[in-house]
Image (cartoon, rainbow, N blue to C red; front, side):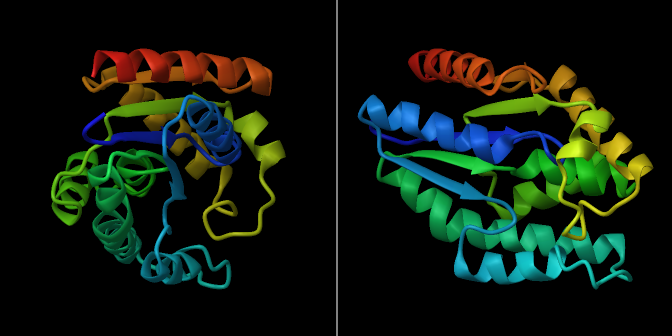
Length: 206
């Protein structure tokens, strides 16, 4: 590969994104690829500082617009200082959350508008989009049992998380980009196998 391959893993709280990102990374590394795993918000020094603010459960008066702009700011730094450089040297980048998370959380659940939030993130990243997106679908009743309830996003209401869950389903169903939607209630090994197969096919196609 002369250029890298960018994979985003999306889904609601407790969907198992981090676990599957690590399993996919090990699989791709076994095939000889350089793999960079990262997360949003975060991934760089500046973005991690912004993450601390965004997920601070003591902050209960943050306007939705402030939240959206902070996510976009963290993403701008992340894209410029970590993701693009890794892709340019030919690495596979696996990101736990990316633009579609903002579309689901701030665009849909916060009511700021999905098109506006997608445009904001595209501007912030200079149109850096994933080559392949994995949507892990877990019902809200299941994800609630997996959440630790320790950060500001996890402690949002059940209604909020229901809106996020439906938004991800709508995004995946209407996406014209290369993606796969996975049933996140299945065994971890089954999910990992489905993901690795889908990613391998996507990489071959590219």
